[in-house]
Every structure is written in structure tokens, then in C-alpha cells.
Length: 334
Image (cartoon, rainbow, N blue to C red; front, side, top):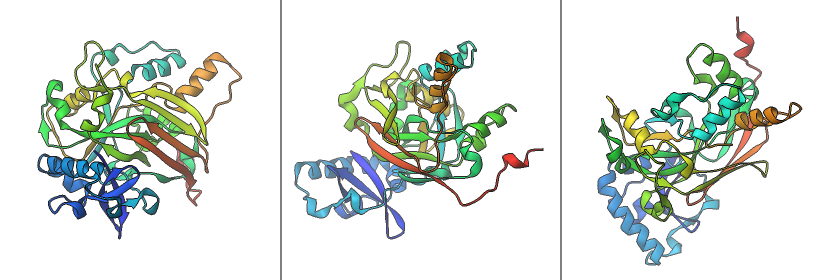
């Protein structure tokens, strides 16, 4: 299934996405909820019902006259109000390249355990405008990632059992203000203000049954599902990044294992993969300067359009917008 949330009379509305048409969940079956939040909290009851309704739409038993087109609505993040948002560090290629560009050795701990950080779940958004303050434009960056959402409560979950807690996959763009990020991380905390202004997910949540044809073995020595899903990013129509979800070294199952150790995870928790190799300007600029001292760095500017695509999931577009303010926290440094 592909599930979306859109703005309907001032609230989020949950709908099936089939061939560019949206079908409101609650309008098609009396037991289905009208929001993603409710769907996730009652996942084990709702999921089998939703599968039958989705199959009826795809078979033509439910006609297109009951749907509306994507162009008629304002899409939200598929999980508009996540209970938390963590972001992992799963792609070795990205970590190794970023460290090589800084002329430091690959950190051996990467291969010992997956890590993650918490970011601002209230700044989750879907397609559309990304509003940025002046300090954000000090090396403003995208990050091409995949993300999952948790669909049932759990605690102390071994990786061997963790895939059953995944509700589905989405695209994630972990927006980054690199100067703010790098400055505060000198104090061994963060990234905090370098990240908390916007995290994009969408355009839909794709459940794992829809992705079975893409499943591949995970990396040797690892545990959990993996998928051959090409990933791409364009800035102003020019492709700048290419990778594959299948290149994840740490699986989502292994990241869940670590997230849930000694704590509860909840329906609606969003967890990102971390950046795919070549998946941000920080890495691309570093590689460019390493190979050519005259390389001109590129960062996102007001008016830029960032588009991301993951095969089997969809494509999402955002435009960078400068807020009408000259307020700077960088300008207030002591």
C-alpha cells in the first residue's frame, strides 16, 4: 500500500494513493481511521482491513469516481505528527568519504554498532516550501535519505524481530545548516540548531508488502530486511546525487534494536537511514576540493528547488524560501 496525508478542511486526512488518485480511508471502510496517527496506533487491527480495501481499488472494484487527483490537494508529510524523529548513520560510503575529505582515518566504531541522534519532530514537513533564516544560508545543505515509521510499541527488541515494527518506508531530506552544525559540534553536542528547522519526509508511506519485489540480502554480518531501491536528488533540475537504499551497511532492524534498548519505541516514531553516499553537498564539495583545489563549493540558496526520488516510493519536491527577517544568532556570538 501507499498511504498519504493531505490537508482537508484544516486537518490531516489519510488516504490510499493508487495510480495518482487519492481515496480517503474512512470513506471506503467504516473501521478505517481518517488520520495516520490513528492508523499507526491501531496498526495490527487496521492493516489487514486496509490491505483488502487497497486491493479492491487496484482491481477496479472501487472506481476512480470515488477518488481525487494529487493535483487537487496539498500533500502533508505522510506522518504529519510523529511522536519522535531519530536519524541514523547507516551508509559506510558517506561516512568514509566525509572523513577522507577531512584527511582523517575511517572511524572503526562505525562497524561495531549503529548510531543515531534525535532531531525536532515538530519540524517534520512534506513537499512545499522550506523556510530558512539568514543563518541557515551559511552553507545550507540537503541530505538524501530513506526513513521508516514505527507501527507498534516495543522495548528491548532484537534485530532479528525488528522488521515487524516497521510500518513502511518514505523519502527523507534531513536539511542541514552546516555552519551552525559545525560550530556547535565543536562543543561535542549537537547537531541541534544545524538540523532542527526542517526535516522533509514523503511523499507517501509505502508498506513493506508493496516492496517485496525489491528485497535483497543485507550486507554480510548484518541482520534485517534490505531493498534494492535507487535514490536520486536534483537541485534546480540538475542531478547531484545517486545511491541506493540497498547500500545501507546497518539495516533499519539493527538501528531499531539500538533505539529500543532500555526504552520504549512508539507508533509514529520516525527513524532515518542517514545520508547515502554522495547524498549531500558537504560530501560532494569535500570530494571536489580534494581532487581540485579550485573547485567552487555549492550550497543551497533561496529559490532553489530540491527534488528527491526513491524507486518504488515516489518523488518529492521542496523550494527553499528566505524568511523576511535579518535576525542572526551567529551575529550574537560572544
